[in-house]
Length: 142
Image (tube, rainbow, N blue to C red):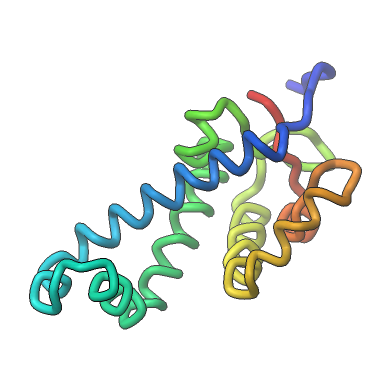
């Protein structure tokens, strides 16, 4: 059902959701790699070096997390906590699996290039990031 009272999520709220998701993913990765981290040492440098050795696995986890939660729930855990959600740009309804996967892939690409694609949110009418534009999505208040 289409809601005519949609309000775009603020960039501040989106940033908070991003931070929550990033801490969650980092925590999961640390737990998954704890045995390897313990061998190399538990200081921040050792943790980062261990995570870098498993970079593709971290990217895969982020891709699956973003794709599944945006497709199935319309929001990641960070977005759920901050009460925002991702919707299809055209229908203003639930995002398709393909759109969620496309959005997730380009979100990762933006992260790899100094978060460049995130800057689009400050200059587009719909506060869309590059991954929102390519995935044809909007982020709105829930």
